[in-house]
Image (cartoon, rainbow, N blue to C red; front, side, top):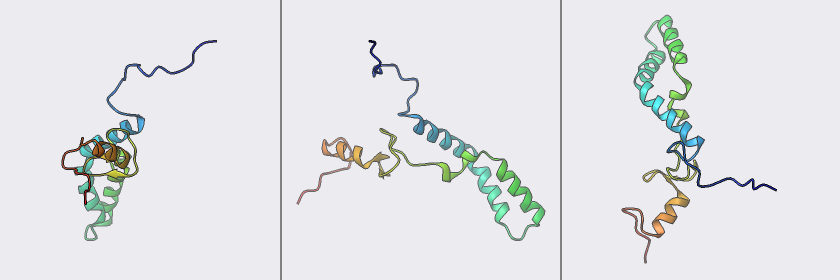
Length: 115
């Protein structure tokens, strides 16, 4: 009978916690790259004064941009565990990790409540 357990000491191929975090980083890079164009094209598309042909061209240009370059596709994730819910925004940590680090005085500017 062979041992089928996974080795936990295997080398890591990247710096990210899991595939969700890798996907989010890719989307953030696309956002930085395409955001100035996206803002200008959206302004064209929402303008009521311009002729409808130009608005239609703006709509087509917006469709041609990568879908992942939209701000709504970016999700806040914990920098340590990649958890997407319960994020403390200032530290980019989930509430669980934040609490465990705060308990042992590992976060700057955080003090346990005393009364």
